[in-house]
Length: 122
Image 1: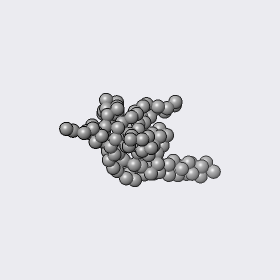
Image 2 (image 1 turned 180 degrees about the horizontal axis):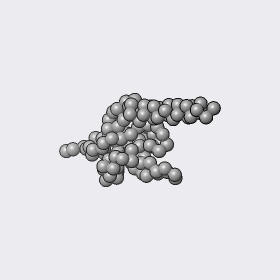
Image 3 (image 1 turned 135 degrees about the vertical axis):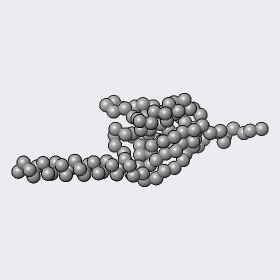
Image 4 (image 1 turned 60 degrees about the vertical axis):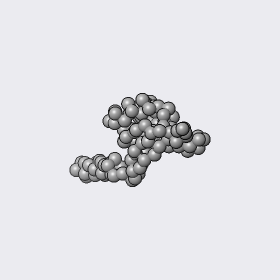
């Protein structure tokens, strides 16, 4: 009886680890988005995650919400510095997420400032 319980417990743990590894290491898609960085915040009660938003249009209807992994400290600092500016971000989309990684399934991996297309150059 004790041996069966240990086998079941180890099987459940192994299945969770395989599921976690698949979610964490296998991207669903990768891409680039650009827009005005309107929000970057460190939020959460028990587990703090970095969350942000990019406005991709004139109205608030086209908002790209994203998360940043806590280990990407350079990306977090760059986002804080570029708050309110027009930026281009590279991101990885995962099938789903875990609450300790972020609120969204989009994870920004790099950010650079871009010239705004809304300002004319004369």
